[in-house]
Length: 480
Image (cartoon, rainbow, N blue to C red; front, side, top):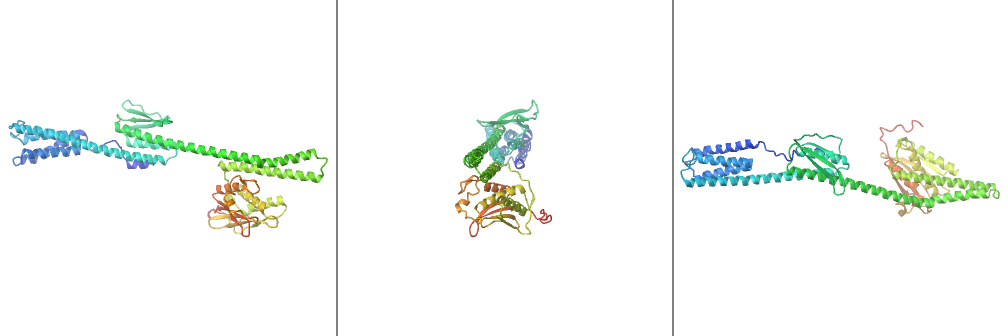
């Protein structure tokens, strides 16, 4: 960004004139003498009016080309050459006819006025050109600022543009650890970078000589542009903080709703069962004691799972989830899920179907196990007792997929849009966190998750992860 401004502009307020004022005046005088030579040779063929018009034209050209001082030089040298070489008596400043003397002084006055007007027009044109150049730089500076999102980049761009377009020795942003040079011959200007509400810093510019009004104006415009860019960054940060606070408040409110119902229910059941065991331990049978103990264990597991899901959801929404990727086999992850389901149900509720050439995938195996477990447990909750949940593997050139097929009730279309939202309550009234956590884990792996209808009834969940390049993929069956 800064380099683009550097490449397109040179020093803005250094006039690109090739010569200095004394040399330009010498050039003007030389032009007058050069024109006088042919006029001297044909002086008997022309009139005083002809000489006057030729010298006026020359003075006008000098004023437009070289400026004010050379035009004055051209006017006076023309007056001398006119009198000395072209008016009788020749080679003397004496004028024979008083009328010619009047013509001569009128010529000098008209030449001076003409030169001044032409020089003024030249200065106005130069000023307009510099103003347009200045506006172009400020426009590009504003565009560069709009693409920046860091305060340090704003300061660096401001300093680069100021150094590139103004005759300054040093440019620093205060407070700064750098010690600016001290030279009494320099002119130092301090400008606050800020708005009415906030001061972001101070710009110190050390000029090699006293700056002109145009240089001061350009420097102030650059500082104003930088202040506006810094204010934009500050407002964006405030909006981001406000959004984070609002999201935290929303999450807190949702958590409180979840605590008020879903956490209270298992706690109440555990408390009731424990109290009955303690108060009625002599009156109830051994089978009843075992049933109460089993209820306490189940509700404790439910409570542990819910608290774990709440903590995992807070990690996902806070962006604190870190992946520890390695090569993993989806069939082994599905096997672990099926084994846990068998331990819980003491029955084969899951059927696995994976192709022999199923490729390995780079992922966080622990998180993917959690994601698949959440989806499978949700599918088991609605799976008819006479059927089994199917976990299949599939792949193509771009993705590797885990497919969980449930044969229970079909999910309504309006519910599909919300089923993976955090804290969504289904028909059973329970807070849904498992599917939202699974979606967050899959998205963290740059994958996708969606739900389809199972042919004949039910819901099919599909988790798709991008397939790793074949050049990096190890042999999926080498260790089996």
